[in-house]
Image 1 (cartoon, rainbow, N blue to C red):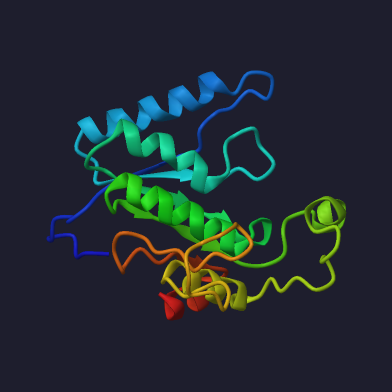
Image 2 (image 1 turned 90 degrees about the horizontal axis):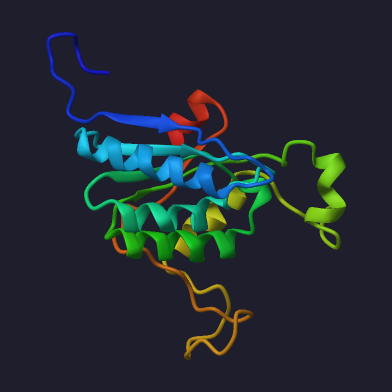
Length: 189
C-alpha cells in the first residue's frame, strides 16, 4: 500500500456478477456491461469472482467474452478454486484467454479441497477422489503447464486432447497468483 502522500499507480474493481439459474444470459450481459463501463471510466483492472456451482461460466471460458468486449483493462479471476479444476484443462483455458485478451489476463487461484467435497466427490472425481492432491503441488502443476511444460512425453504435433504438448500464454508473467492464507500467499507471490 502506498503512503498517503503517494498517488495510486493502478486501480481495479471486483464484481461478483448476478446470474439467474433459469436464465443466466442477462447476468452475463450485465457483468460484461459493468466491465465495459469500468474500462471507459479508466479503471486498470476488473476482477470477476468465481462462483462455484453457479450458473456462471467456468472461470477460464467465462473470461473469453470479456476479452472481446474490452481493449485495455486487465482481466482478473478472483479466485479460481483449483480443487474444482483439472490443472491441464485450466492451463489450456487460461492460455487461450490470455491470447484472446492480448496478454491482459491476471488469473488468481486458491488451493485446498473443493467446498462440500464430501457431497460432490463422486460427481467431480468418480474414479480418482481418493488420489487427488489438493495441496500446493496442484498449483505447481498448473504453473508448469501454463509455462509451456509438456503434459506428456510427446514432442510432436498434438494428435489428440490426451497428448497435449503444453500450454503457454502470450507473456511469461501470466502465471496464476495463489492464495490459501496471507503469509503463505505472500511467500509464493
